[in-house]
Amino acid sequence: MEAKEAAGIRSRTQRADYQATADPALNEAADRTADIKLLGYGELYDLWERQQWQTQELDFSQDREDWHERIPEEERFQRMYGLSSFFIGEQKVAEELGPIMRAAPTEDQKVFLCTQIADEARHVRFFERFYREVGVLEADGLSEMLTETSSHLNQNFGELFDEMLGSRTERLSQEPEDTEALVEAVTLYHMVIEGMLALTGQHFIMEYNERENTLPGFVEGFGNVARDEHRHVAFGSVFLREKAHEDDRYKAAIQRTLEQALPIADGVFSPPWAEGGDDFELFGYSLGETRQFAATCLMRRLKVIGLG
Figure 1 (cartoon, rainbow, N blue to C red):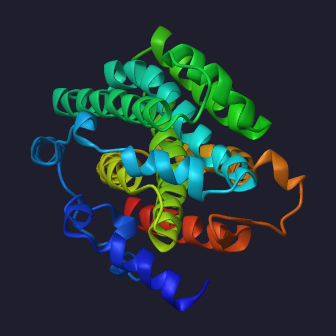
Figure 2 (cartoon, rainbow, N blue to C red):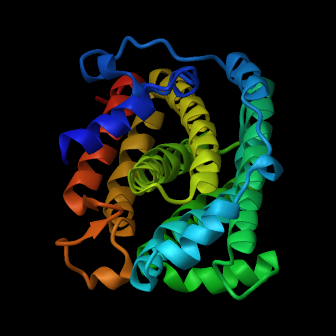
């Protein structure tokens, strides 16, 4: 990773509004110690109120010009994997949050998870508006957009979201008192899907567009999405730290879920057009650099949770 590019990502992760979430991945001290202060559930709710934004305020006029006139057709095709992963991912996690929220043991946890449901819905609308106003697809309705853009995803994506996360939330729908299933679901949702995959992709995609001076409206909105995700992951970090200290059974559930999910999550980093090889770049970064960033973020969070 070139120094200039790495510096760009570091400067973004040091943004005051990102740092305000207390996501352990943004704190280099978590490389050395687990004694990192996390926000409580009430504090996370208060932060959500202060960090509101509106998709309708974003201006995609320059993005439309960039997409159709400045970005070559082959690059547009390659970019579609990242865009589709986020668009479909936001819609899927919005659907899966309900059972997690209802299974949360405390009212403070439930209230914060309600804010996350609202966030995920806003993220879906952000992508819908970007797709429509920029003219990314031929489809115009939300359902049709989701169907058309899903063709750019790979098998690992479906396995992680539909099978692994879906099976946990289905169990919680039937047995909301199953705390072990809740711990597994939060590990998948907040640590793997949001913490590893989403936030890694977001930082590299924003860095690439800023370097190429493309899609300014998208970058502005995506920066807001990433801020929301850091806040969500901060919730997952404090929840899992509490559960890991509460009972070794829950610590084992976190470890077991990670062992099952990480090989599949790693496959999500590789787009279908990479043809199974590791020698490719996406948004200007190699697969190795992407893995390194994701691993560093995960290890910091796990150390603070009590598994490092």
